[in-house]
Image (cartoon, rainbow, N blue to C red; front, side, top):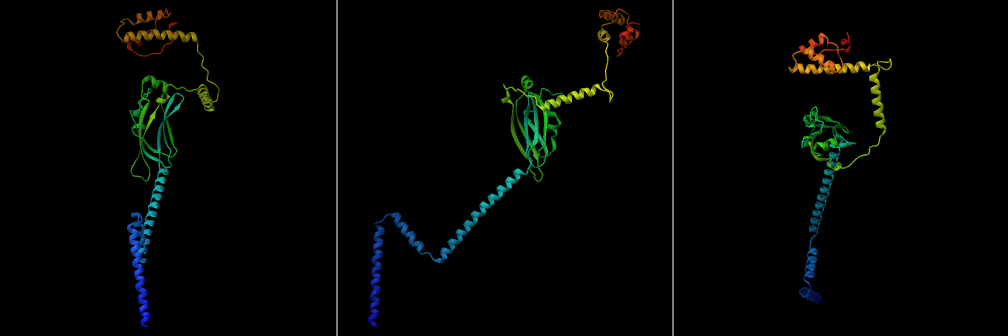
Length: 311
């Protein structure tokens, strides 16, 4: 029995000596090896020394990081979807110049899917036109008050000017336009600024082709004129004019107007004599009626007829 135990001890001692020799060889090998390779061996031994609990903790942390990354990308996708929906389901007001041959029109259109409310437009410099009568565009109700509601896909078109007259007058061709408006379900107003530029049209021309629209417009114009010439359903209204009588009374009217102006200016003391001379200058030799003289002296307007000179 004792010999068996001694044999086991001898084997154990031999094994320990063999392990020591292996460690010595590894130590010597590591001392004479590449440093990067040494670090790799060290890391390998450390990983091999980790317990199952450590591996479970690492796996749990990897799972947490994976869930966090998934939540981050899910949040970005949801946010982008909300932004896309808001960009699509909103009003979008566009202000632009629209040319029709040489005619310049200002267009205001809501290209969005929701109504635009409290729409205000401003131009820098202020919008001017060669046709400022009765008031310039910047003083119009559109510029001062705005549009209360602009429905989706609604477009307004306003005549502003003609291009040749605008060039001749030296009015601006470039404007900065600012548009503000509101949409339902949003507290902050929408704002947009863009440049309207007509300078690229300078030196260009247009050969405009007549279309069916032009034909329809011409027919409508003819119908309006015929309607003005008719009387109910009884055909055309016809007026006859005696050209000789009309020409004579036109000359008499010029003579009377000349005497009236000079009388009003205090240049004439004898109205009758002045009127007689004026009528003679247009070929009338008869004495002017008393009521004509009286009306001119009193400064009153009156109707006259050439036949009164014949009586």
